[in-house]
Length: 264
Image (cartoon, rainbow, N blue to C red; front, top):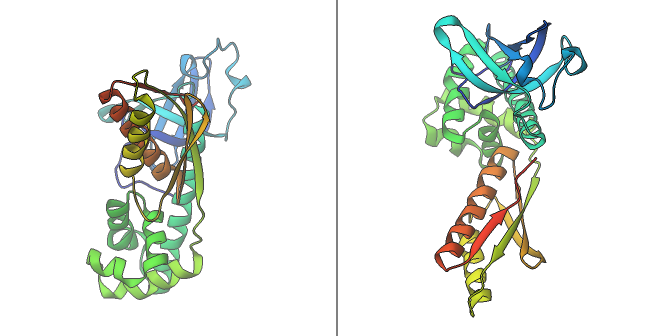
C-alpha cells in the first residue's frame, strides 16, 4: 500500500480515493494514501453542473482524484471535492500516484532482500529520500544516475546502501515528461521588443538546471510557448510556472504586461 508519512492530508492537497458508498447526499471514499481515513464528497462537490443522480458520475470501487476542502482530525472527518479538480490536476496526481507505487515496490524489495520490515525501510531510506527530493521515487532516480554518493551524502547507514543502489540501477527507468504553457507578452514602448527579449532571458535564467530542458518559441505575436522537459510532472509544473512568473515580473518592471492561459 502506498502511504504518506503524515496521518491526515492537508487542506488544498490532491488525494487518490476509492469510492466505497454512495448516498443521496454524496459519496464516501477511502483515502488510499492515508490508512484508515475516509472522506465525504458532498453532492454539491461531485460536478460543476447540477447533479440529479450521483451514480451517473461515480460508482462503488471507482478510483478518483479529489481535492481536500476541510480536515477535522478530532472527528476523523475529511471533506473532498471532485468538481474542483481540473484535467491537468488529475493527470499530475495520477502520475504522482504511479511513481509512489513504484517507490513502494522498490522499498518492499529492499525489505525482502535485507530481511527488514517495510516500516524499517521507510524510516531508514524512504522518508529521508522524500524529505530530500520531495518524493521517494525522485530520490531513486537520483540514485540510479549518481549511485552510492547520493545516500552517503544523506548519511544513510552502510547496511542499506549497496542493496538500495543495486535495486535502483536495476528497476528505475528515467523517462522525460513534457509540459507547455502559452503566454502573452506585450510591450508598447519604442524598445518593446528588446524589453520582451530581456524578460524572456530572465525567465529562462531563473530555472537553469542541467536536468531540465526549457525552451521558448514564438507562436504568433504576442503569444509565446514555454516548453519544459523534466523527470516528473510535479517538478516540471513547478519549474515551468516559475519561469513564466519570472518572465512576466521582469516584463512588468520594464513597462510591459504578460498573461498566461490557465490550465483546464
